[in-house]
Image (cartoon, rainbow, N blue to C red; front, top):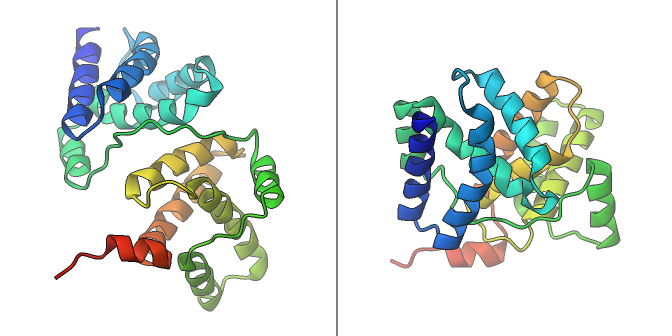
Length: 217
């Protein structure tokens, strides 16, 4: 148990040094204690960790599940003791310092329905650019359509959040809680789509965001 607790404290100390408030650290400690209790006494195995996370998420309040999944993902490499991966994540700001509150839906269809009811259409130029690249690359429209729906749902959740990579990662976690995957390949395909689009999203922000991201000479 000591190794698990040491890993938890190391994770919490890191996000605190990176700017997480005492409240954020406290909330994450309370959430992750539920996970470490499930991991105690078990070998460090990725499948075991995933199963523990599934149980852990079921035990978390609905409104905390996005934060719970985000901090479980970040805690994983501390639990595993993967120093190389931790150094890589730290160097590219791979840790979040805010606890999001997102009203996640029960399914993608429900989320898209909410988006439709809100008449939401504030999509950044990156979406059209990315979908255009897929079409130019030879992808059929019937293959593009489901990708477009998923990305629009992500952008709907991102609306109003600061335009930062950490919030994109949080929304990916939120989508993992709302999508139903037939198998692991479907889950991997979603993550690949999210990673691929991320660089377009970051490179082609809305005009209002471009002005705030500019660095004066």
